[in-house]
Image (tube, rainbow, N blue to C red):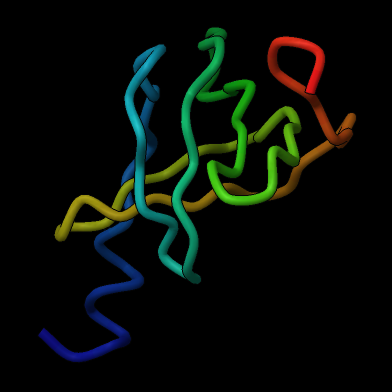
Length: 80
């Protein structure tokens, strides 16, 4: 499959809470909360940057991306 076919094969996707996904552009993201209409609260597992991802999609190889994000913030766990 060439790059154009790969990108055209993207489908709407609803992430599952607690699962970690590889982003199509790089990085790993944990789904913290899943909403309807292919939106999810995601957290970058390396930086703790969290945001609401809109228009989440999945590619044939299981990697994901999203159309845009809002409400980004750094979060801390356990008072760290």
